[in-house]
Length: 384
Image (cartoon, rainbow, N blue to C red; front, side, top):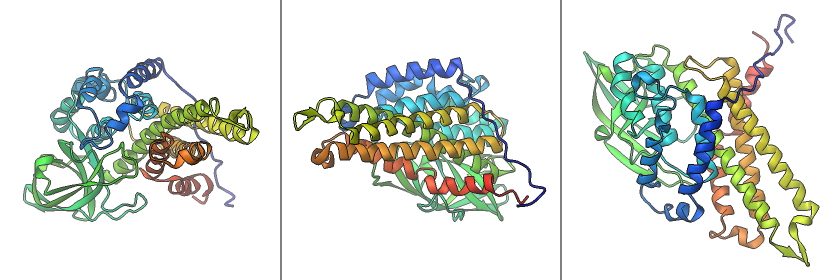
């Protein structure tokens, strides 16, 4: 080890604000009422994957303006108050464009100039659906961006394709990453400018994503976000996406745990409730511990977020939260299937919904191995 290496230190504070508590209570009640399991199943085969009336109610509650400053029509509470909404939605498997639009708003808020913020943020605060389009293939660990913007005087020509764009079929505009003259840029592209929009099949049938293509799309200079350090901004957006996905996964893990406990308390085997057997008790407690640990890390990470670029502490916290939350929902989903026996392997069993959510959450914005690898570089490499 380098003799001059500095010890690893980072922020360990836990700050769960009154605003977050109020939002979480409201979101739990709303999502519980609007998204019972029968409603979730009824939406599995729908085109959009969500109820437009429920989405409008979310907008009316001000949820889309939580992380948008008051100057642009929002509530100005910060991105940390979007986390409890994502958790409550995950607990009830309620899928709307909330996370996708929130991340698109963060891209414009953090990367745009004043004109660009005034142009797009008020619409997002009032329910305009938008999404990030970052992946040129299916690998969050990849760094190659093949979409390209060619500059011609004051205009830009965009070509390329993006995979797994959340709510790509219903988004009104996209924030697209591309290469331009050797550097990365983010461009705001309307849905009308998309050359091809193809729905993609996902293992989590409550989610929706699309593959979108651009062929010689003309963009004005005002469509290119002004942020000079676009690579840093993209890294921050991926971390914010990982944190919101972690919150959603933790909520789903809570619901999965409740499903397990309910079944253990009604199913009898050999004349005894199966919940009385230690072989089932211990894994159930392990799920509870995993969920509690994940939620602690999630709200720790949320407390470190502000309007500025994410610092080293925030990056560590977001990555840890994603690892623990997705590990928790994967373990909970697996145990739920096993505990339900043969019925657990049927499509009609609700445990299937949580296992599918687990598989999607694990991969979205980087799986556990992806984040652990990057955490190792931060926490264990003291050579600098």
